[in-house]
Image 1 (spheres, rainbow, N blue to C red):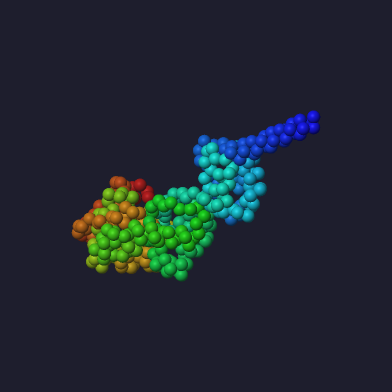
Image 2: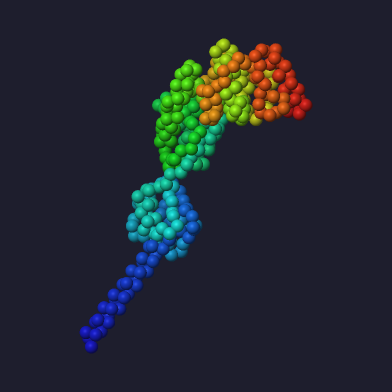
Length: 341
């Protein structure tokens, strides 16, 4: 009788343990996410175990979340938190998810550098894409020592950024970001582009500076090589570029639709009416189309250009100042007729 009771007790205990084990396995291997698509969470330096679990809970499956919380508490996750952007795939259980979080196996994402006009605007853009505040990025981009370490100054640093799309990590530091951009810049210029720049006797920084002006002159990529040829002709002859976009940049009034004569005396090294040659640096992050337009500019003998009076976004080109005045008069008349100030 006693033997039978002991065996029965062992069976019941064993069955209970198996049941507990099955319940634990159910919670650990049930999908943490209830979504059919991969979800991402962003963990920054202020996050705690509870805040991270709360982020996951927004798309979490009840059973899977129970397993994740249980596992997190018993694995000392609180002391093994890593910042970054983490993927949580459909069907993944708590074991896989927590292992990824504990070991810092974050996912990269695609960051596209925008063609913005100022470094402050770039800093603001990047702060919305990365685990960085705009002030720290702006401080670095305006810091003489930081720019010098990268091979630039505070005026030319915009030339380092090539508006491509890059795989990066969300929690990268400012230093890592800038060093990555420097390497991407060097890769972009290696080979044909550097050779073409040498042929027209311009440095990559100078090419980007001229390209930035051309970008501001027109959004018509097919016309950019023509405009580039005109400005290169002016540079070769020692003529001032007289580019209206440089006035807007000098004044930081990018919304201006007309550049009146009174603005042409603006005291600034960026004023290409007062100063010969190129300005100290780009007036925006130059587009790749703008850069390639300079490197592959059209060879012609035009020295002047003026926006067409049909507001098509293209230009009338002229070889002589007299011809240019006629083009300018037609454009001015069109502006007045449309009451554009």
